[in-house]
Length: 210
Image (cartoon, rainbow, N blue to C red):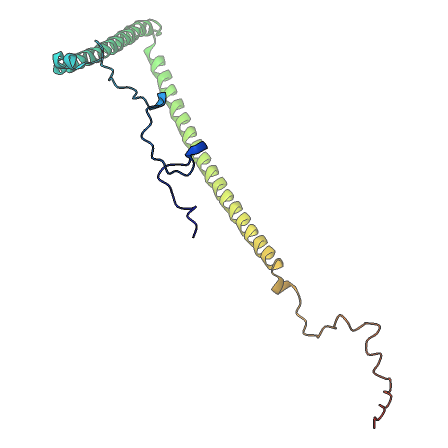
């Protein structure tokens, strides 16, 4: 029985070392890739949150300082907003005062005519409001009618699509489209030229062997 497939203690080598019968010690040669790399840790430098720096820092004070800066900037924004709003209110009040001064000077001496004009303006405004309400009602009615027409049109389109799909399915069904026939079909070899040619021939009598 062959022992070629059995493993040896040492791999086979060329020359007079063939066969793997000699035992070799560990080699003293090694590759540069086998050397240990990164044997020293890189320590943190000053300013990179070292352990001493973290112990000396007061995180509570830093947090409070950040909160104070945040709220101070927020209060400053609110003060600016209030100041702008106050300036706008002052401008509006001064403008209103100027209008109050100008309007009485432009009035006529006849207060009755002014009152009549005001009443006429009020009546015109009421008429305009009535016309606006009527127009809004008419617009709502038109919108409602158009919505109903669109719904009706969509319904008719859906019905038409369903009918078209049903017709297409019926046309595509071979069991419903092809007419069934129970007649026996002719064989493919019924018209063969040489079919049954020996049927009418008489057979010769066989010779009797004695």
